[in-house]
Length: 170
Image 1 (cartoon, rainbow, N blue to C red):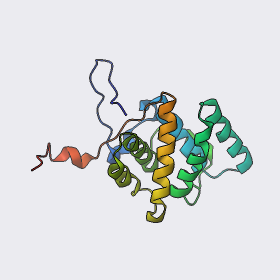
Image 2 (image 1 turned 30 degrees about the horizontal axis):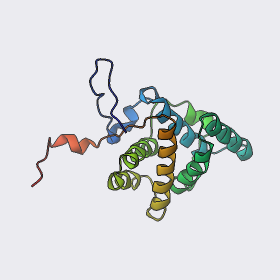
Image 3 (image 1 turned 45 degrees about the vertical axis):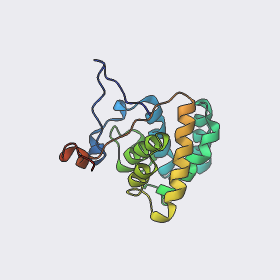
Image 4 (image 1 turned 180 degrees about the vertical axis):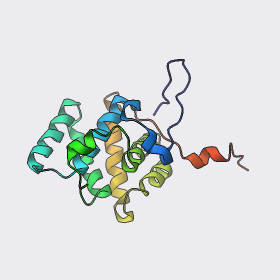
């Protein structure tokens, strides 16, 4: 995935995974917003599961990637074996990102960049070990569908990478 360039032509400041709660949904690209919305919608407890599934399926169709809907289902099942107790309206209206959303975005971008180890590192924080492979595969499929449709998902950074400054490799 390509870096985002700010209004002055400089690369945007990196988003830190450890500070994901400081990142607003408004700071995301439209593709990133769509992925976060889909994760939130699917991970939340629903009054009517059939209606919720129809809405999600319709949204993927309208986004031009109906084939990616099953991958989202697989990803959420792998990372959230139990639904969040909050109703969707409570989570969908939140401006701030949570750990699952930030790590999913970072892992999707890493997978698109061919950085499997980095994607694994990001997802192991939010995914049970036994489901990691499934989560990686489904997220890679989602990322590819988003990229095919012209969307951009950007990588995040770990604060520890900035704490010690540049490292030399010997």
